[in-house]
Image (cartoon, rainbow, N blue to C red):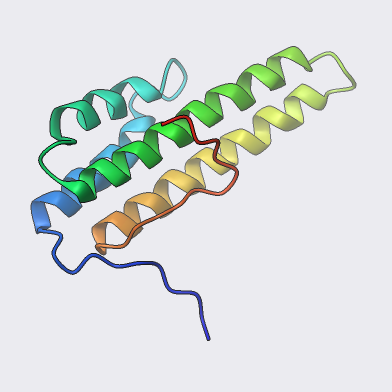
Length: 120
């Protein structure tokens, strides 16, 4: 049986679109601090919708995780290029993860990022 994500049939189109934008907001400041736009969006609407609250928390946790992985890459940069590999893996994981999270949000599905540390 194929894997199916939990689906929220009550999620309104505006909630789906807002959750989608929360996931993709990490691209806005991709090279600086990607968590800021998603954090602001989540703080604005988290109490209006449980759907947005869940997606916002997940997007923020993932972007904070990517920040941690980037710092690990920076700390290990001079160890035989290990830091570069960590950065490259985090970069690819970030792009693919944010796109998959946005697609799931637009379909009304809940999404959990791989390799995500739970801060919130």
